[in-house]
Amino acid sequence: MDVDSKPTMEETILVGDDLMMGPPSPLIPPEIASHVLEGVDLCDGILRNLFLCKVFALDKELRQRLQDSERKLGTSMPLGQAKKRTNQLESEATLLERRLILASGVEGMEGFRQSWSLHGLLTDTKRRLEALKQGMEDRKKDEPMGESTTKKKWFF
Image: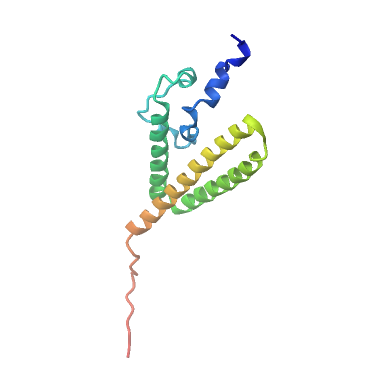
């Protein structure tokens, strides 16, 4: 048996079908991490690599919690801070789009890894942005229309 014909453990993990079933694990921003990760059973790096925990189900749950947190921020943050956060997420998405374009020029496995990772980050960032905007819209719907304190008198 030829040793070179067998894939190494690294190759098996990196190109396995299980890894390509969805985007890479989401990155949780530190400012909302405590809310997003509350009650979540996290696996350490070794267990994730050995697939001993439900990584993909966990990732899906984390993505949903991340979007829920952004939506709640949109409804509860002062409007100025919410707009600032929206601008920050839009800038982050633009930067990721540019990096994705650059990564598409990298050949081989390294190019694939970069593109796959950046695509996942970009998708997550856009969904967070949409959730934040939805929260801001929900707040605007909930706020009553401002009634003027002075009454206008009309003369004919």
